[in-house]
Image (cartoon, rainbow, N blue to C red; front, side):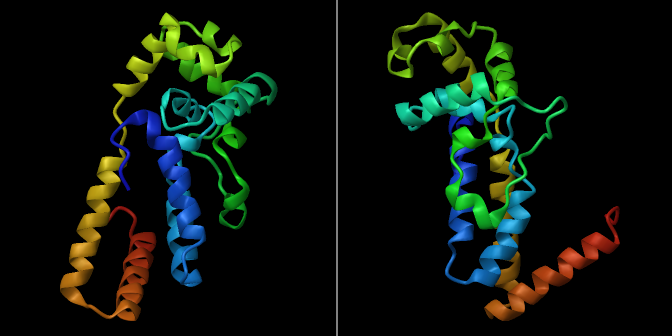
Length: 185
């Protein structure tokens, strides 16, 4: 669960959700996936464009993302995080989240977006792309906070019980308490 580089955050988030959907214990996978689906910031239509600057994103996927950015009309007020149905996540790709709103990220990087009119296989030699990629890589991502939270809950649950059933019950009790008392400190 490592996405210290902003450009890999969309792929990391989507891969995590797919892994949870395919988890062997369907009940735990479904519950975990439901929680994580509420935190899919980086696959939102505005931020999924970060994956264009990730060297691990294959050229075919970049082509599909650019095509969606040019053809799929985005919402007038897009949600800040993607709405991802866990039962259909296996069929989703990064391109399926991209819309015309995804161009806004590239524009915000301030290096121009003419490279979007060129095949992604040729981007590496373009100044506008390399400048935008450098700027995108320096954006901070918040997955490191989530990682600390996961480490904390793992250590906490491990100190209280080693029984998985009791651990799941404990997590449900904590979640119910948080729902009942959202402002409790």
